[in-house]
Image: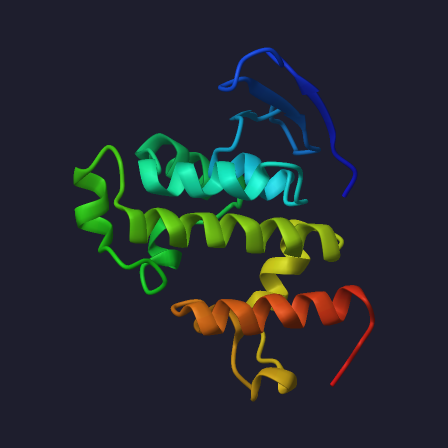
Length: 167
């Protein structure tokens, strides 16, 4: 997936990035810099990237940024309900999420960013996430994302696929 970016306001910390992602019948998606959906597209580490994410996690993810991530990944809140530490109903009542929920949202964003980079399309990555993997003990990768160890295992498996290293 080849993505071209253009910074709208590169002089401010809160600048926006306009993404040109091929989608049928839709306009380019506009992401706030360092929002979870921005992280999906910019999953590479840059100077200060991780420190900025730590600050964003501590401040809490805004509900609007969570909704944008769901939309960008062509998912629903219901799909993530077993992964997130807060219930969907309690998340709908808040405008900014707590540290634990925010951290899980950013973990998801980084994982989807890696997956989109390695697989040919969003659909191929989601299909892989929902298909049992022999190297993960015949478990469905998506079902392992409810713990940090599961995230690490799934991430390592994607990296193995990226470098054609099979166990």
